[in-house]
Length: 221
Ligand SMILES: *Cc1c(COP(=O)(O)O)cnc(C)c1O
Image (cartoon, rainbow, N blue to C red; front, side, top):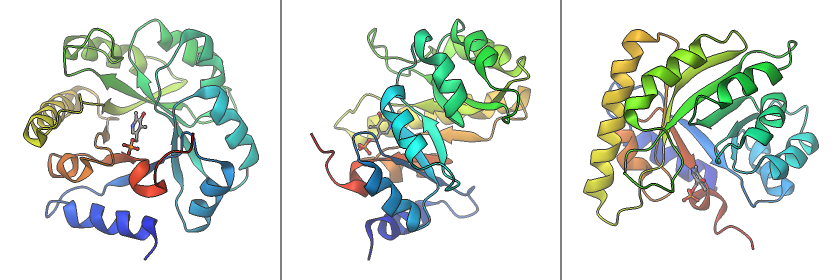
């Protein structure tokens, strides 16, 4: 069985009865174009990249195949224009300053750029993500921009060895997601869970999981 089939089966098996469908985002950072093309040939459409420069080469090389590109790495203001022009979705918006930069650079002939707000649930000063208290205002700003489409929340919890701790963080994000959905009806995506904990994240309500190594094997280099 292919690695893709195996992951898709595990995602399906982890879904709570009656739960929403869960999208697989294949995290292709560090992977060469040929490996992405091979997964695309097996039917995988959504790919996640961390670095804008690295991604631009791949997006150009694989143009015309109907792939959907998500930026999941930390977003810097000097990369906003390239991100808005070449990605379909940005999952790592974490500060107000970036909102007008993304909106202004989104080309008029493309659909609005889909945006997830990245939330920081553990109090680590160095890690990117907005604090939960800042999230409603960020959502309001994104929703007010016609060239942006607010779609949901993303988080990367601290890789605590105790899965119960990560499960509690996922539940925290799900509660925030449910609360925001009442004010922002366009919100439909809860992106949480990676290779080591995606089944736990799905049990707590993830609608998208971001998987790299469990799909591609260890990253080269
Ligand atoms: C690298 C990365 C992933 C995938 O991590 P794996 O452990 O390889 O599955 C998911 N999300 C983000 C934001 C990442 O940077």
